Length: 198
Image (cartoon, rainbow, N blue to C red; front, side):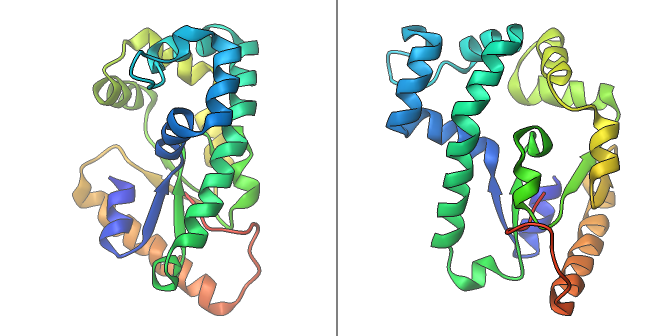
């Protein structure tokens, strides 16, 4: 909902999670490394990553998740850079947003100018992920346990959007942050990273 709001303002949004899926399915080097890590069962007969199988192993075995992240995150960073460079100038301005669930865990925050954290109560987040991904509550709880605590992310963020409610309350928040970002960028104030964020 938040990213849709920024897109409605004409901002380009790149989804790191979507790019990760594409990289794991199409990048030959990433595929070969994932096959070495997970075995032949990592991919379906159609050549698509078996995400449930990989997630069960990764979230069930912390050492495996660390190895998975070391394979996928650098490849996703490279793909983000490649996509941004390919954008026409008007699509890069005034900024590009990178949507990612693991901004801090992956180290992506160090590459970004600002970070927006979208916050909701844990039960709300659990329900939304279950509805979105069709997974069990236990699966979602394993994912949450593998991530940085939500309050830590909030404390580290440059901007926070609370998303407990409907879109009518989200859009004004998005417009306000967009206004602030444009003012910051127009002022020429130094930024933290190389890109811009979510």
